[in-house]
Length: 214
DNA sequence: GACCAGGCACATC
DNA sequence: GATGTGCATGGT
Image 1 (spheres, chains in turn cyan, green, blue):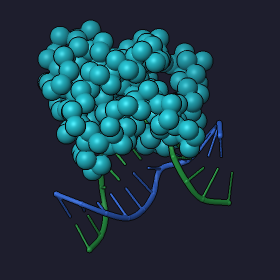
Image 2 (cartoon, helix red, strand yellow):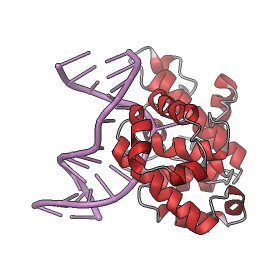
Image 3 (cartoon, helix red, strand yellow):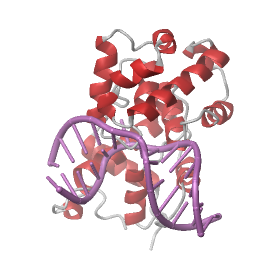
Image 4 (cartoon, helix red, strand yellow):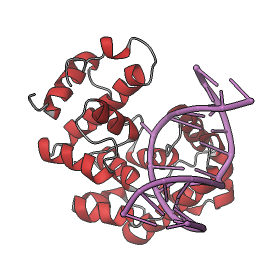
């Protein structure tokens, strides 16, 4: 059997769904906040928390840096795990202040490998959150792997079902051109596919765009 | 009323 | 090193 190329999958998904316009946010800082809030959480709940922050006029690095953690926790309550996430946001803001003076522009000039290492050193930021920040807030070509991605690739026999994050990411990074626009769209399309087909107990694979692959 | 959602850190074996 | 558990709200 001919080995399926990720590029082929991308083409099929893009042809079916078109551009996904990720990340849904007004600016890069909002992406970072959303990336932490969405950890194991439905996006609809994250939106409620983001709206609370916006209404309070606090969706701003300097203001959140000043805001007491308990008040932050109350505002992000709809996102769930609010005490944990308030702490994680604070941990990021402390790092952001100490290393970059709360200035996103300063992050852009840092090499992606260095930036990734720094983000992973922040308590509460793991591989997926780090890559989401790199790709969607800083436009760096670091592929985001989530559970949807793993499930889809596993189902199509492109990875072992127990493959870890680094293995799956390596597959994308090696096969594809390191292009942030491509990585951005591809990951968003995989999420779209998972939500529209793979998670529904419906006809699913019969009309799934990837039907012929595998 | 279960079960799940765009994870992560930590305990325990 | 693998496996299990806490964190918590809101939608289906």
